[in-house]
Length: 184
Image 1 (cartoon, helix red, strand yellow):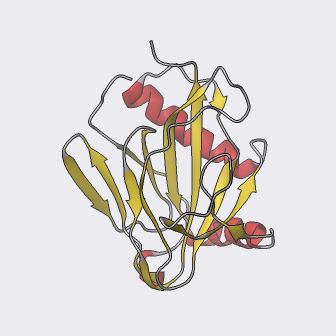
Image 2: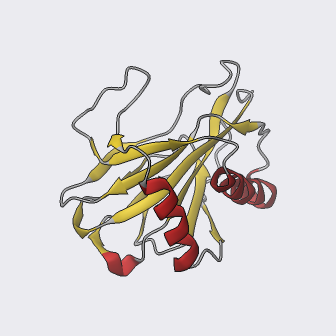
């Protein structure tokens, strides 16, 4: 995989009112415990609630646009489409977190495709939660972000990253993975 020791942030212009519409629509879904991998294991390094958004949902279309902008401006990867459904993630209890991991995986839609770019889009105001910082390793450097409503971070799916434990409040985000053919 080509290494670009950089992440991409994009000014999405998503306002609190748009964020509230998204959250209100998706919070009516059945939230379940976040799991890891194809075996749906609940492991010691993740504590959150999630639901899945189909790739033809308007929210997924908006997020795909952000990833395609990042890919055009910085990465230049051979991308096809979503590698998985988009995830709505809620960290709403003290101690909710997601420990260090990367997003490398085969596409759930096509076994000849892999995840290449990941996106994390925050729907919560940074004033609505304590803790919950998004941290990412780019090369040998760790970057830390206290994400705010509409903040989007796009990065290669092999980058290690985490969400630090939420101390109080509620942190809500959207996460997705755009895929394409394996790197040569």
